[in-house]
Length: 187
Length: 280
Image (cartoon, rainbow over all chains, first blue to last red; front, top):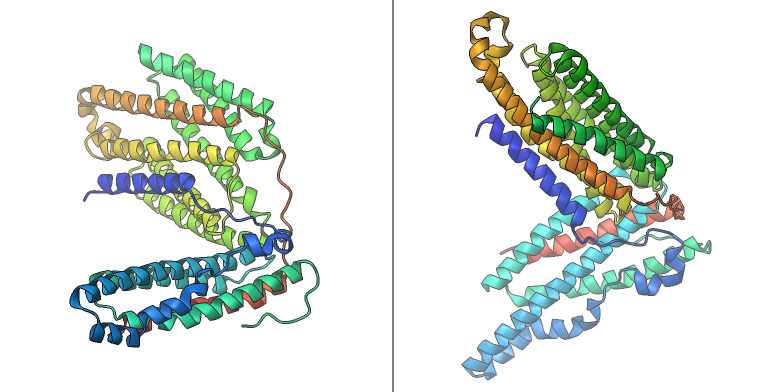
């Protein structure tokens, strides 16, 4: 490609990116520390999906699969497996939402901080990009049918701990912004 | 000058006059002084070029120099207006601004260096210099504005409608300039290059009609896009500029220091589990 075409493509691509960013319906956060103590439970991100994880863990468990294979007729088994994949897909979506909420919490805290660390911000950006790639791969393998559903059950524990951690963090931020903070925030 | 060129020149001067009227009535200079300065610079340039056409003639060398120098001055003032847009909202968030200004300055320096090197390598002619520099500055403008919006979207902030519309106008004019400058520059440095060379005077007569036709076509396209951008800015300034929003209440610095590593650790453990799942 000659330089004429190359520069024109760069111009169109940059302008397109600008317009997309300008008009894309991105999520805006209330960026003010005074927001935390009043509406912390309603407006801040929480891991909502973990409450269903015991059931999902049961549905995806190896024992459950074994029981189905031994007792259910082939048609029922096929239908059950299809439904289990659908449940797993929804679970992954919930996981994605919880990850996004946690990352968003990190960005809100960063935007409201008088100082931020370049290293921390770069790390979070890389982690987010990495998660997007891994999530797409897991979803792809799940759709292709070559991902053991039992492995997804391993994720439930981490999300559960995460939800608890986020609730604690938000309570601590609320206390901090109200000037009541006395403890540490270590993980 | 033909009828279309005369019409476009008058329309340009008139519309910039209207834009400056909006700039003063909406008191935009209180919040965006460099943008107000850019609008005044546009008016001064348009009047200067018009005077040069009247005094020296549309096809004269003086008018030619006046046009290309005014184009560069406008590009420089537009860069300042973009820097002001970058600073406008982010300075209320000192943490992000501390990181953001470095990223944006890094981008700007990179593109300016590219513009300097690119221009340095061009044949020694004002039109080719100006076109190359203007084109590279336009690329830098759109890239910096896109990065600014990316930072805003990433941190969940939003530019106010006035600033968004002004940025859209700048992006529109820069985007169209990148394309038209590149096409014209390709003609100047290729097919029409003998027209700029003192050694090829025998070809001047043959090339002159082509040179003028391409130049006229480019000027017409440039003027139409410029009028569209002025329309966008006039639309943005139709109402008085609202007062600047109050600065946000910030969190104590310890919250970030303690919470951010904890959040990143959790995010990393998510990824580790996904990697485990993907292992055969």
